[in-house]
Length: 267
Image (tube, rainbow, N blue to C red; front, side, top):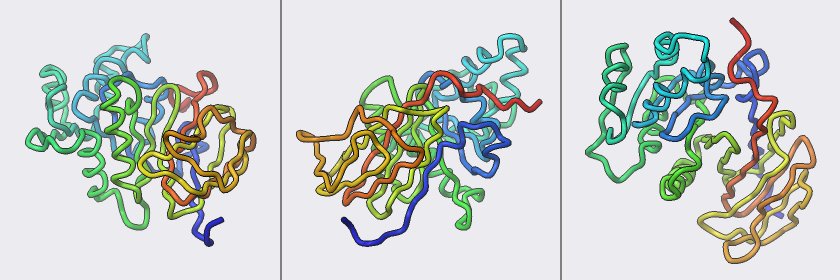
């Protein structure tokens, strides 16, 4: 279909306990929506943890609810963000004061109203000393889906603004990531954690040719565009899905309600 190109491998191994995925290097960005149940697990193994403005309220209010038998103050001290960044119009004063007191770096970018809070956080991560050329950080964003549609659309736009950065948008129900047209893609499925529902969506530009393998309804040099065919409500059939397209595509797959650890089982 297309000329030979490099293969980009994708995996959701960050949803697995540490002894199975400690080689995965990622930064975590928490946005201002309900925390997925696996947030503590992601937090514990992230190399860098950021809250995008009101995401700090979510960490402060909701993380203690995952540990009902522990003192909320202890939990809030255990799960302190490294950085809070954004236009600072959503974070509560008591939350801001708490994290400032305990050493969190706060970056107020209220002067910039042209980029989203997620965009601001990704820019920080991309320029971080932890994000070395030899070992780029993957970026996981929780709370990026659901809520107001304009916020959701802004988060999807961020994927297209940084196609050379691996960014995964997460909710309790699903994940979304960009599959750049510059690569052939090999998606490794953890069937105990994700699927079977999935989709491939051409946002921005139509796709004249998309070919897949491993899906119940595979595509073969298929044209996809809004107003025509798009691959939604498809089903994962194999452990490895391959995708090749002449257009950037969004890949989405459901996350199962059972089988996911809330946090690592290690003490």
